[in-house]
Length: 148
Length: 148
Image 1 (cartoon, each protein chain N blue to C red):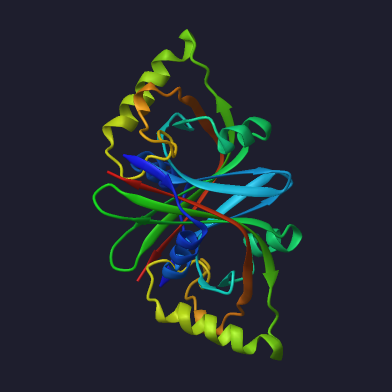
Image 2: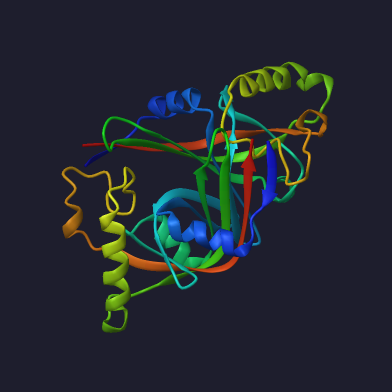
C-alpha cells in the first residue's frame, strides 16, 4: 500500500461528499466517540442529536474531533480528520434556514445509522422527540489516502 | 427502528467477533479519533501502531474510548462503546506470547484499513518499521442494537 497526504481541498471535497463519520468529544481527560450523520456546508459539519452524554459533554467542552472515511478501489481507503469546535444552534428564527437545510439534507439520506434520532426506548417516535441542532466548526483538517 | 440496550455479554461477543473500530484519545481537552484494527482477548483490545500523535497522546493520558459497529439485517445495526485504559506492551520477553498472538490474529485479517502499519512516506515498508504494541483494558462497555 502507498500512503499519501490529502490536500485541504481534497479533504473538504471528501467532507462534502460524505454523510457519516465518527465524532469524539472529551470530559476531564476521558474521550467518548460515537458515529454520527452530518451535512457539510461553509466550513461546518451540521448535525442533529437527542439530548444525552454527547451533547452534555460538548456543551461543557466544545473541543471535538470528527473522522470520515471511505473505501476506494481494492483495499484502498481515504480518511479525513477534523479538529473542530462545537456550536449549538438553538431553535430560533435566525437558524431556521440552516436547520431546515441540514434537516432536509440529512433526512434525504436513508442511512443505516440513526444514532442522532433514536434512543433505546420503545417505541421511539423520532419525529416527536426534541432534537438538538448543532454544528462543528472545522478548525483543522488533515487526510490520508492509501492505494494498492 | 427499534432500539435496545445490549447486555455486557452481547457487547463482549461483538468485541470478540470484530477486528476494526475507532479509537479516541484526548490531550488537554482536545479529543482525537482514528480507525484501528484490534484483537480482543481477556478484557483487552490488543493493537499495534507506528509512533505518532495517537501513541504520544495515549502515553500522556491513558484514558481512551473505542467504538465498534456492525450492520445487521436491513437498516439494522449494532454498536459497542468501550471506555478503557491504554497500556503499552514493550518488546520484552514477558510480552512475546501476547504480541505474537495479537500479531498473528491481526495479520490474518486482510483488512482494507491499515492505519497502524503505514505512514505517508514512499515507499512504506511496513515490515521494517518498529511497531508499538499496546492494549486497551476494557473498564466499561455499553452497546445498542437497532432493528427495523
